[in-house]
Length: 328
Image 1 (spheres, rainbow, N blue to C red):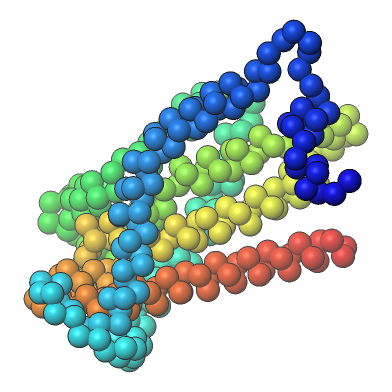
Image 2: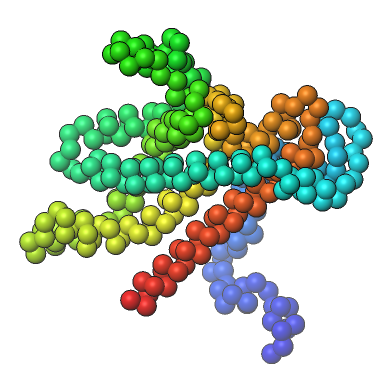
């Protein structure tokens, strides 16, 4: 029997199921109801698609075009300059300084968030710990606070003239403390505040990962006489290694988006010591007397490539770790 003859048969013959004698075929009505339901689903998703396209996809794609033109953002005159903006960005020493500061910021934040949250999650996951739900909530509260507000409040707290920290320091005879006003301590201080602000997210990741470890394994280990250290080393840690890789990738990617906190606290100062790449882009695109949107867009595109490279290296190391474990 040829394919055309098969397609020519009625639906009941193709499926091998015919409606019972005396009963109507309800499948067309069911299909109609499914189509009407799908129409409503797409109707409710349409605003999300429109807003995502307007405020995410379009600016992302437009930045590639703007990186190839010379444009101040105020007029409609856009002069095509090709890769000249990229050459100017790569030749700017301040860009490479911003790259270095961004990477240093990432290297400070990532271990503290990943390892610190991991150790705390083990403590909070213990069934013997009283008020564990209260402590989890307290650690997660800074996450739901607006980041810009956190930056403004922290700038007041660390103010060397009238901030609470400086007042306590002077009362102890240590003199005023200006952690955000010194180029040697501003980046580390901002990184520690960033860790405190988003520590709860990493903590939730680890708590969710710990819930995946079967309790039967812990009970079997106790029956075999294993202590807490042996249980952690031979059961908990091996099962959490895949989650470690995923959480590290998410944390590293999150470290590249600290603009709102850094802008409200230091605005890149003092002496550009906290100018991460996002503030560098903002300075040329919006804070300059004559905005250079083409130059800033080229820097943004290079910043995106940097994020892809860092994440790609992490994924490559993840694949190597998996292969080494498989061979072992």
